[in-house]
Picture (cartoon, rainbow, N blue to C red):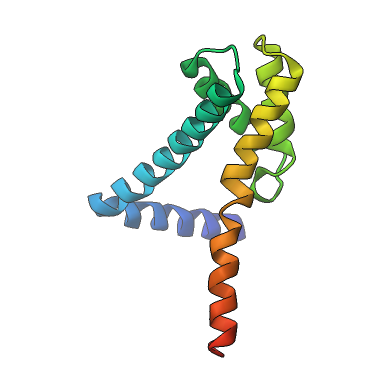
Length: 131
């Protein structure tokens, strides 16, 4: 009975989101844009460090690696995505050092660099006693 209620609630939520096409488009479009933009960042970093793989192949490897890393749930994919991505790039023919540099650059741009504006805003909010 509990599982049926939970499943009915989930299905009701899915129907509610998809009943409004703008909400469904925002949901699916945002998910697709997130994956594509992250793949583009990886391609750009790979090009910058001289990764010898085609950009389309790097993007496909990112999608495959992120899908595989989802099986090992870690916050933000930290650790599991990095390992799977480095393995995938190396298995596809990239030198290990280049693959590692690509993954580290990708992680720097997608996880660590975005923290700086957040820290600045936090400092301003603390000084204004908003927090």
